Image 1 (spheres, rainbow, N blue to C red):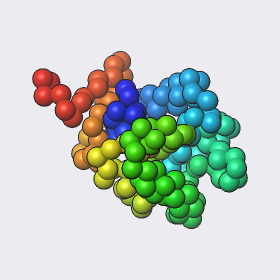
Image 2: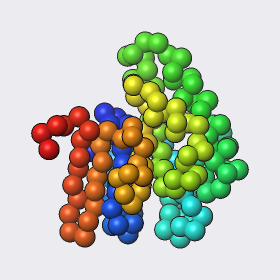
Image 3: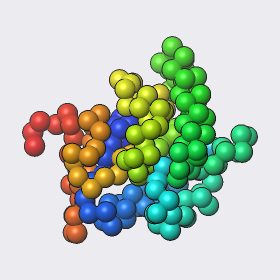
Image 4: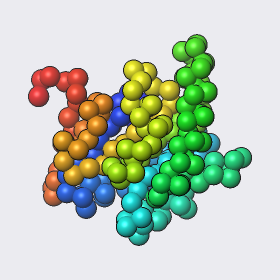
Length: 173
């Protein structure tokens, strides 16, 4: 699963299995990438606070020079998070040289874990509209394929004993 090539992806299946897969992905990203080259943002329902509480301890969720934690669990926090990420996204879109844009760090991975809250996020909508990657990826978590945004280019389906990956561009089945 390449979050730079497929910057809008989806994970579906029974919620518990899908959450375990997302947690594994989070741990892998945090272990393999420094917090100054990768930032992780989380948008989730406060009812699932206990499931996602560990992410606040990851250095990857802090924007240190701004004193911002990249976590939103309600509309007010989402507004702050979106404003911050939107500025960064706009700055990256203004870079016209492809090579320069690829060198800009950190890369942001937004974990969209609550459909209701994420639907109100301007930065997620902007990332999904683009035909190029501007250093932002969105990982959507839902129970069914029909609930994922149509912009997802890769979908991982979790079941009890396996996970299957579907590529939007692979017509071989």
